[in-house]
Length: 545
Image (cartoon, rainbow, N blue to C red; front, side, top):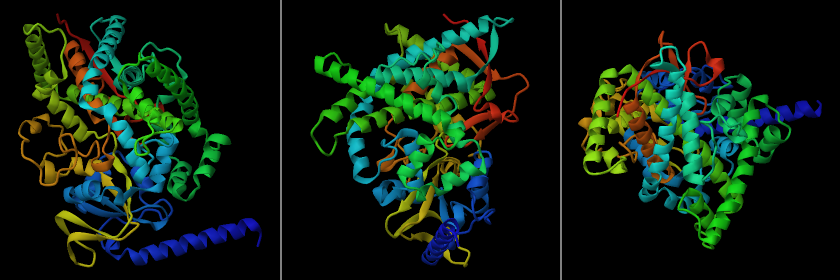
C-alpha cells in the first residue's frame, strides 16, 4: 500500500470511529424528529444552500416543530432550534458555555481575520470591553449627520438617474447596488474618517472588493466549496491560510484575497493617522479612536494589539455596511409591494418634518425617529421578515446541559420532551428565520409582511431574546451585535430621507426575487443568479419643498 492510500485509510478510520463514538453519546439528540439525510457526505447543508431562504425553515416549523434534528457532513447530528426558551437559555444563560463552532470561527477568520467575530471566551470578552464604548447611544447620535449626508447624496444620485431617463420622472434602479455603495461610504466616513467614494464610482480597490463578496465566496453552490466549508473544522488554520491566500487554491476566493490585502493596507494607514491625531489632540470621537485608545491601554482585560485592531477595522467595514445595505434593500422592496403603508409612512415623515420646523429646527434628530410609529414598525418588520444573518453561527456545548422548551415535542421513541438533555460537544444552530417567523410567537400571519403588528406589541415577552423588538436578528447575550444601534439609526436616516423624496413601486414586469443565503441573506432575480445580488425597484421622483 503506497503512502497516499495509507493516509486515506487512516483518515477514513478516524472519521468512522469518531462518528460512531458520537452517535453512542448523543442518544437524546438522535431521538429528536427530523428529515431523512439526502447525502451522508454533505448532509443537509447542500439542501440548505441551494434552497431559497425561509423555505427550509417554514418546512421544519410546520413538519417537526421548534427543535429539529438535521445532519451535517459525514452523518454529524445537529440540532436546529427556534424555541424561545431554548434560545434564551443558549444566548443569555449559557453564554460562553455554548462556544462558536470551529468551522464558524474559521469562516469568520477568512472574512474578518482574528476579529471579535472570530474570538471566543476570554479573548472575546477582552475585544468586547475594548469596543463597547464606541457603540454607546451618545456616539451613535453623533453619527446621525453623517448618515443624513450620505442619504441626501444617494437622493441626488437617484435624481440624476431619473433626469437621464426619457420620462424624466421615474427610473428602475438596482436597490441592492446603490445601498451597498451608500452604506459603505457612510461607515467609512462615520467610523474611520475614510473616503471610499463609492457613490462617486471612484476606482477604490477596497470598495471594489466588497462588491458581491459574500456571493462570490459562499454563493457558488459548488460541491467543492461546500465540501471545503464542511471539513474546515478539521483543517489547521495555517494550512487553510496557505491554501486560500498563499497558493491561491480556489479562484472563487480571488475577491476575498483582494479584500484582505487592501483592508490590511488601508487599516494600518488609518490606525497610524489616528494615533498621531490622538497624540496631537485633534482626533474626533469615532469608532477608530476608541479602538486605537484600547490599543494604547495597559489594562490586560481591554487592550488590543495592532493586528487585532486591523482585524476589527476589516470586520466593521464589512459587517457595518453589508448588513444595513441588505436590510434597506428589503425594506424598500416591501414598501414597493405595500403602497398603502408606504403612503402612511410618507405622511408621517412629512408631518414630523413640519413639527421639526415649527420648533425652529432644520433636521431630524434620533428622538424624532423614535416618535414615528410607522417608521419604527417598517424597520422592525423588515428585520423580522428578512434577517440578514439567516442563522446565528453554530454553537457547540462545552458541557452537558438541559435545554428548557416553550413547547414540548414527542421524540421518535414516543417519549414526551418538556426539556431536552444536551451532551457535551453537541452542535446547535439557532435559526433566526425560524424564531422570527415562528407562528407560536407571531401568530398565524407570521409569514406575512405586516408592520401593523408592531403597533399592538407592548407586552414583555416570557423569554426575552434580542435587544431590538425581541428579535433574534442581532443575536443576543454575550455575542449580541455591538453595532445594532448603528444599523437601526442608519436605516432610519435613509428611509426617512428617501421615502419623502421618492415613490417606490415594483419594477416593470415584476421580476421574481429569490432570497438566497451565501453567508448572509441576499436578493437575486430568478434566472439571473449569475449576476449576483440585485433587486430592481422603480423609483418615481416626488415634488417636495
